View: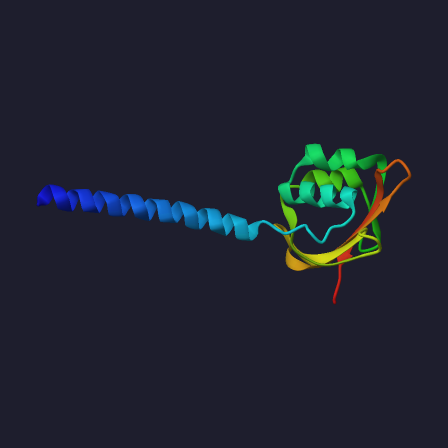
Length: 139
């Protein structure tokens, strides 16, 4: 009888551990953001790289002299995103406009918290992003 109880307790612990792993996995799935609304291929790649904090995927999408404007203020693109990638991300995409180049959504910054933002991409004839306007927005 004691062996049966020990066996049942072991199975219960095993099942509980499995359920916790599944729960963690489902929580991670909830964190993942749906990018189906992103119709422009280059913008989709940029947002996916931003979401993953992937500098190796992010920077090659942009020209060497890419311009960045944060709430209308010119910023150093490279320096800004060296710091931001891995610490800033969309939590939802609420609307997409301008042929898929303008993105509006809820955003999280480890430094600044949660707020609504816009990302407006400009792409040159070579298919590289040459300007990005970002900022807080009310809608």
